[in-house]
Image (cartoon, rainbow, N blue to C red; front, side):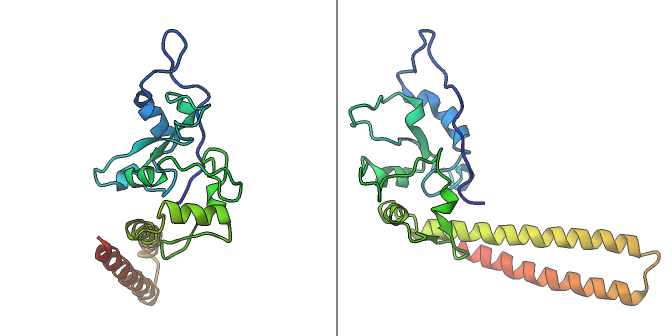
Length: 204
């Protein structure tokens, strides 16, 4: 649900001369796909952006000597705010250096609590990123919490569907008492769903 594993493709598109395209925006579709349509920093999905759109970020800043501006293997997908906050930051100290999102299991570093907040998990590198990129800004915390609620709603809806299928099988042979019990259970689940939906609506 959060920070899925991402993998770079083996090769990016090149010009007829075998070079990378001079305009790195040419790689937007490929990078978007490789990053699974999510900001590699705050994890917001492209569909959750509300029309804001994503940007291409040079993971290693362009002003570093060995960085080629149009090298797609240095590009990642970022939401506008994370891109702006990261800017040219590139700490060299190992304890606060950036995680390479394509090689590091980010789930172990960015622990998402049920409240929607990201915990640093006693990791100085994570703590630095949370502070620098404001990963616990209210809008993102609310978004992550809504994912938890939506998943719970989907789980309950699946239970309801399975119960209805069971009821259909019981109708010919079950006693009224058995069916009554199932209906009561379904009403209870429906009530829980209503509460979850109301909670989700209050966040919008």
